[in-house]
Every structure is written in structure tokens, then in C-alpha cells.
Image (cartoon, rainbow, N blue to C red; front, side, top):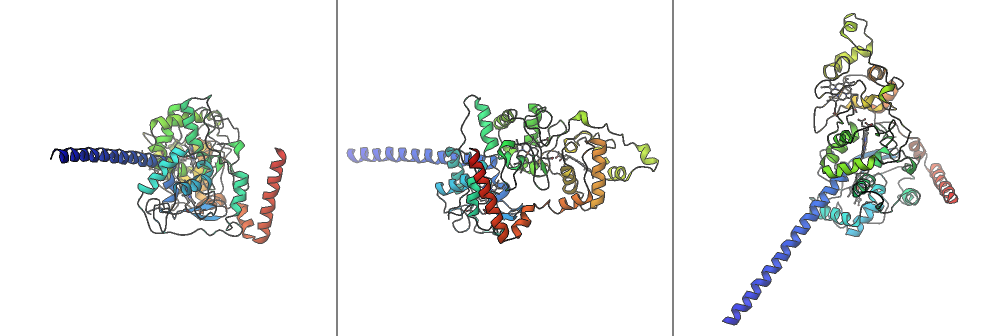
Length: 449
Ligand code: HEC
Ligand code: HEC
Ligand code: HEC
């Protein structure tokens, strides 16, 4: 009797300690999954891997590239349609090196050139989240079919050799922990350079011009280096943090288009500590003078569109369009009113190109925080949009910047196709030319070393 009791007591103690261990395991893995979810948000994986109205991470979003449409793939843990059969190593290879489980190369529309900076530890958390925290979806969705020679995925191996930098992030010990955290996020998961760094003719980021501003085909992602005139050097820390978390700097800059989307889905969910780290790092990004933003002093003073001009019946067509469509919110002289931004001196009217102002008018702006602006694409033709936007630049911004009805038409249609597209359609000949170009480039690069 006594013996059985002590035996069963040992049994209970064993069972208790086993279940405590299981619980500790479970909460450790819950913590890992939660960390992975945060990192997936910081990496904005959902922005590309979730189609409008589609299931989370089931892919199928069409990404317009100069070479044609590339569809994002299903990255739910479905064994048949997603990445359910990926091991941690397979996952790491895809995310950091752009290589699929079957060995095929991914197109760099997947920002693996930035994600290569993600640490092993964070990779494990991301993997835990995608395997255990995401609902599997058994639908493969549309498949990418690029023209020759880009349908040969092996050609990406050459591209990777030339352009992909898959060195992991190495902290700079001469800088603070905060700076290093910011650098890790900006250069890695938050992939700011994917949009803000100009690309060469073969679509690779130009490393010597990091964050100096680039056109995304429609929207223009401005220079965000520390340069005081061309970049964000004159912004206060508070304005930068406010812009990254709400889309409104409070000092004349509001986010639109792809930046607003990144803020809504990703940056607004980052912790204040991470936003502070990003801000600290941006302050220190080497200044670049290309793609300058006009400073306020270069702006011609607002011509005061006043009611007299309207009443006299002599108002220009631009003024009439402005007064009938825009003045109710932005006010007659573009001064704005509570919560509705001023257009006089607005950052959107100081960019090196007018594209963002055109895009804002065509598509409108819908921030998660604050008031929205309606889309006007159905209410105005190309000529009217161009006249109106030129009126804005003349009166409220950098008058040297103008647009044309032809450009508005292009932007409505999704931006300018790059000459590479025509080349790609040229088929065989083009294939040869591109391979040759890549070889020449490679040879030149090696010679320089
Ligand atoms: C800017 C858009 C974009 C973002 C952001 C993005 N991806 Fe992708 N991803 C793609 C595209 C496009 C493909 C498919 C490319 C192809 O077919 O060559 C892809 C492919 C993949 C694959 C390969 C799956 C397969 O077998 O086809 C994995 C894994 C993946 N992404 C994971 C991630 C993770 C994790 C994140 C966030 C950290 C992320 N992606 C963020 C665009 C994106
Ligand atoms: C998907 C593309 C994309 C990504 C990723 C992106 N940006 Fe942007 N960003 C843009 C575009 C486009 C604009 C211009 C928005 C406008 O004019 O309304 C912009 C504007 C900005 C501005 C305002 C600059 C000004 O002069 O008004 C800042 C600051 C900025 N981005 C910082 C960042 C940082 C920091 C990151 C990474 C943490 C980042 N962006 C990631 C596309 C992007
Ligand atoms: C219903 C009110 C409303 C009307 C009408 C309106 N806007 Fe706006 N506009 C806004 C708001 C709100 C924002 C800032 C949105 C944000 O914070 O993202 C904005 C922002 C802008 C911006 C800055 C965009 C950027 O990317 O930084 C421009 C340019 C602009 N509006 C032009 C116009 C023009 C031109 C018209 C007339 C065709 C117009 N707006 C009509 C409310 C309005």
C-alpha cells in the first residue's frame, strides 16, 4: 500500500513536471508565433501575398513590372497550394536568397534582396508564424507567365550573381543599439529601398544611390536621405514619426498611394521604439542630392485665388476646376482647414515630378487615421486633370514642375512601360542582347575590382 502510494506520488510529480514543461513549451512557441506575426507585419508580407478581397497570404496579387505581370504566390501552410511542405531551410532559402523549394529562382518582385538581412533568429519566428499562425488555403491562384527570355527562371541566377547582396546584417559597433535596430529594419524587413532606391536598366537597386528617390511607374517615392534640401534632413523627429505611423507629418506632408498602403498595413503597427529606431537611422543615411524636393523658399507665393476673380467671370479654367472640385476641402487659397491639409507649400507640390499630385487626384487617398480624399478619375478627363494639376503647381508649389494630358493618360493606364518590355517581346534577338549585356557588365565589374 505504502509503496503504491509513493509510486503513484512520483507518477503525479512526474506528470506534473511533464505538463509544466509542455506548458512552458507551448507558451514559448506561442511567443515565437507572436514574434513572427510582428515581423511579418514589419515585412509587410501581406501587402503582396494577399489579393484585394482574398484570403490572408493566399497570393494572387498581380504586380505590374516592366516585364509584365508577376503574381505573388500562396504562402499559407497548405501542403498542396502553399508552402506547407517547406522546411525551415526551404523557407529561409526562398525569403533570403530567392530560391524556391523546387530549386527555381524567384523573380526579384519578391524583395529577397532586402530580406537577406533578416537574422536566423527572426527567420525561425517568421517560419513558426507561417506554419502555425496562418490558416492554410488550398488554392494556387493565377501563375506568372512572363515573355521570353524572362520566363527562363534560370536567367535570374545570373541576375542574382550580379546584383543580389545576400550578406546578413552586421551591426556597426561604432553606432548605438537604436541606430542598429533602425538600420536592420530599414535595410531588411521594412524594405524601404525597394521603393525609394533608383534602379538600373536591369531593375536592380543602385547601391550608390540608396534611398535617393525613384519612380514606381505611377507614384514617385521621394528622396528620403538626410540631405536638408533634397531629402528629409529638415524634418523634425516628431514629424517623421508622425508620418510613418499616421501618414501625416503635421508639417505639410501626407502619404498617398503605395506609401499610405505600407503605413496602413505595416508601419502603423510597429512599436514606438521601432519607429524611433527607424527615424534615428534615417537621420544618418548619407545625403544624396538627386531628385530634390523644392524647398519652401523656392516656391512662388500663392496668388490668392479669391472670390473676386471668380465673380469677375475671368477665372482661368484651372481656377474654375479647383474651385468647383477642391476648394470645399482645401479652401480657396489652398490654406486648408482643421484636419484637411493645406495645398499651399504641400510636399506633393514640391516633388521633382507631378505624378503624385496626378495620382492623388485620380485615385484619392484613404488613410486609416484621419480624413479621406475622394477619387476624381471619373469626374475629369485627362486634359482637365492636367490643367488642374498645373494650376496647383503654378499657385501652390514649384511652378517649374508641370504635367501633360498624355502623362495623365499614361498614369491612368498604370504608368509607363519600360523599354525593357519591348526588348523582351523582341524574343530571341533580345535574349541574346540581354545575356550579352549581362556578360559585359559582369566583365566590367570584375575588371574594376
Ligand atoms: C513587394 C511584394 C512582396 C512582398 C512585400 C513579399 N513578397 Fe514573397 N513573393 C512575392 C512574389 C511576387 C513572389 C513570387 C515570385 C515568383 O513567382 O518568382 C513571392 C514568393 C515568395 C515565396 C516563395 C513561395 C513559392 O513557393 O512560390 C515565399 C516563401 C515568400 N514569398 C515569402 C514572403 C515573406 C515571408 C514575406 C514577408 C517577410 C514576403 N514574401 C513579402 C512578392 C512579395
Ligand atoms: C511600396 C513602396 C514604398 C515603401 C516600401 C516605402 N515607401 Fe516611403 N514613400 C513611397 C511613396 C510612393 C511616397 C510618396 C507619397 C506621396 O507623395 O504621397 C513615399 C514617401 C515617403 C516619405 C515622405 C517624403 C516626403 O518628402 O514627403 C517618407 C519620410 C518615407 N516615404 C519613408 C519611408 C521609410 C522610412 C520606409 C521604410 C520603413 C518607406 N518609406 C517605405 C513609397 C514607399
Ligand atoms: C473631401 C475633402 C477633399 C476634397 C474635395 C479634395 N481633397 Fe485633396 N486631400 C484631402 C485630404 C483629407 C488629404 C490628405 C489625406 C491624407 O492625409 O492621406 C488630401 C490631400 C491632397 C493632396 C496631397 C497628396 C499627397 O500625396 O501628399 C493633394 C495634391 C490634393 N489633396 C489635391 C486635391 C485636389 C486637386 C482636389 C480637387 C480635385 C482635392 N484635393 C479635393 C481632402 C480632400
